[in-house]
Image (tube, rainbow, N blue to C red; front, top):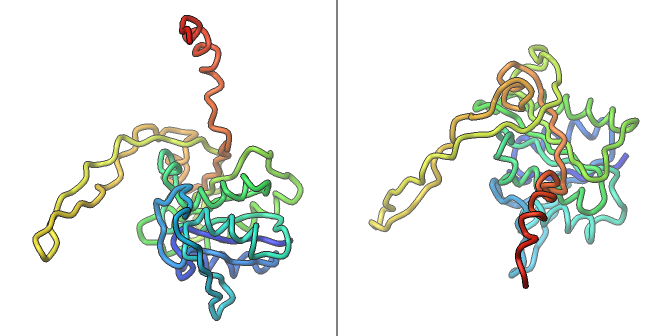
Length: 250
């Protein structure tokens, strides 16, 4: 089995290094990631500047682009084979609920899916960011299952694992995305030269976090696995919208 591994925290992050070591026990792993932290990059592409690559001493390939750039470049140019699976992670911090829209980790997996490959995103949920091995362990078990139960062509798996020892993990739950209240407002400050600068505020509190959600699973000591559609069409609204538009004449 051949795996393309990427992330959004950059090739020097602990999460991707731990996951590469774990995946190497079950597959041939090629690691291609951003040369810096690209958290929050979502599905952005680098269109106005050329991409540059550098192979590191550990074999990782650093790219001067976004997570989406990394996966696209690897598959279209850097690899002389087609990987069997794209894996993104382990992200430093959770990617649950609304956060998946902004996540570079989820975006890297989505790009793999766009290019016709099964893909999963993996994140460690917790402020201490200590137990990456737990997330790596869950990822390996999921990949072993995927060999006999392939993913549907229009989906990726979004995995979140609580930052606890693997012995304390209660199990795995299949979940839906929860939802947060809006994030805190931006914070205004000044730099040493007296110029205005702005920071994004903290994440908003959980609004929809009941049983069945990814938030609930993590809060109760379970790993969360959420299947995510790449097709974002709101099919339930199409008929209603068609009726509403009937009166418009162009």
